[in-house]
Length: 536
Image 1 (tube, rainbow, N blue to C red):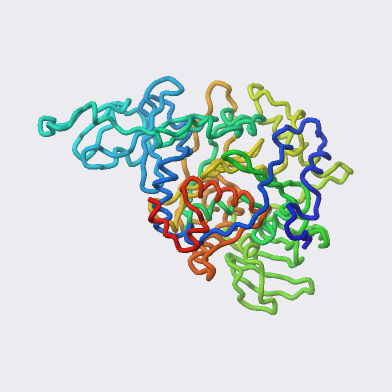
Image 2 (image 1 turned 60 degrees about the horizontal axis):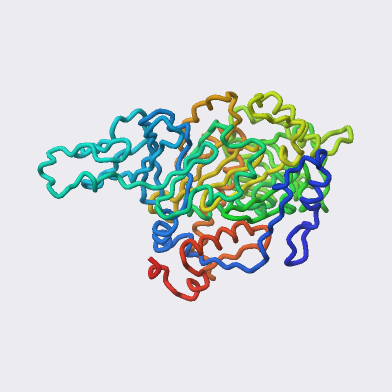
């Protein structure tokens, strides 16, 4: 592997600034992409308890989820008056309701009857005239005012003026609806700060929810989110990305309430600097027969859940799809590549050949990949987007540019469709709901297509069961091989703390700085034995 001196903020590979300077449209690189704002280096130790403690979870409910702006739904789920979406976070539930025809006629009510607490709605719906409780029939108008109490004579102390549904603040950005239960919180625009400037090339309001998948994960929401905040794990978890991604020379920046990582594509991983560039072989298959870029070993699908691993001397061993040895002289294998090759496949992709897509005419690789993307955009973008693909720099077209907006929204930048949201799964600190939304350019200037129906996956479901994700599901399944064991491990780690890299994990460090501020706690005090319960 190519490594660096301890404490530096980059690998020995080409820097991202050098890649921008070599961009075929370097004069079109937007200022926000060049803006560098690295987090100052510093040691960070995080108590392992923040990932599994019930007391810490309860603290988050009180001082995070009841106090912060958070993505609740998309405007397109609320097209008609009386349409509503149920937004659950921990043990809190809000009813997001379209109350009128205006763009801002959206309200967020506590989703609980003021009589005996029953949820007013358990799932999303359309066209409600009133919000009626199914238990005893108490009802509220769409504006939140009390509409009716059956046998009202029996409730002489109930004043209708005092029994409107409690509301959260509502804000809109880019087609998304955000809520903040804190009535004293600053407006959403103040919270987002300069983040909208980073989305100027193809604004989010010009996109629609083309794919939406929600999966229950057996891991704390923070640990799940952190797996998607850095490229440091690529060398171990995603070996199939290393030939085409500069993982170790990714750039990391922190801004106001958001942070950013940029992982360059169409460039080899610096970890491969001293490794041979293996020639593609005629029968290589992207998902069924692949040469490991670090070892050179070939991983070949033999049957469902069975992988043959062939070393450079021709020795063959058999492993299952979790990388567990079955037979043969090779006793250790990469579990993530075993899963990639031997695990469930996306129908129709079994015979896709290995292709790095490097040009053979001398064109720089990144420019070549960007030109392919420009051709695609000419077919998919409409005139109303106001985007000329020839005016877009290579970096915006090919690189993985992924943001984290505190506390739990992770939209990708430029032309990448990915958006993530991470939520605790009810009151269970050991479980979360991980959502993937793919935001495609809207073909119509006047009306976005209806949002995709949510594909729900249970804790034991494979990501490949969400066919709408295509081969992206295989990437998520590799991450899912790690995360349950992370959750078990944080309960077992002897030091009772985890440590993060100065630079490559600076987005995570920034998140934990903000979380401590939001919760009014100090991790050092926690590790010294001060219980978080006293903070409530």
